[in-house]
Length: 160
Image 1 (tube, one colour):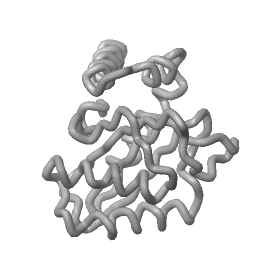
Image 2 (image 1 turned 45 degrees about the vertical axis):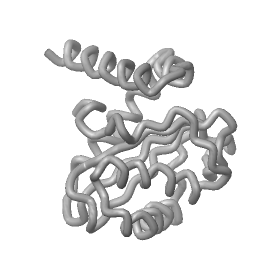
Image 3 (image 1 turned 45 degrees about the horizontal axis):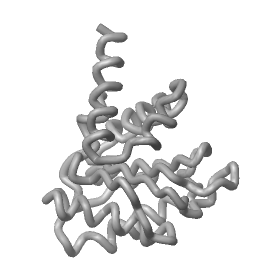
Image 4 (image 1 turned 120 degrees about the vertical axis):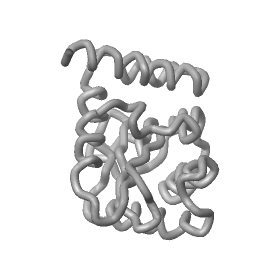
């Protein structure tokens, strides 16, 4: 699976400013609405689903990264968003650090599997030398899209 298969360019936020986890998730979900992937009336229930998942355990995996994820009846296919926060957002991370990079993943209710592959893909990339640092230094949405495409090509070449 490639980042470009599920992270929507329209749902990449270069600078996320909300102060709370709920506000950050709501802003990211709104980008799915703006991209035509969700109905406007779905935002609150999707955010509630994401926060219910957070109650099970924080999706902040350390190193300033979180991968909030949830299934929802209004989602038609696996979709993802990326947002960066220079200030960081409290996300109850295991290492206690604020989150600066958020990869949000949604998938249809009743579908099992693709989200696990997406989470694994992101987790693998975070461990790659210098990848997260490069991501954090991207100054424009286009730079982020290009970095995602570059890593997708690298991974395809490594497999093929």
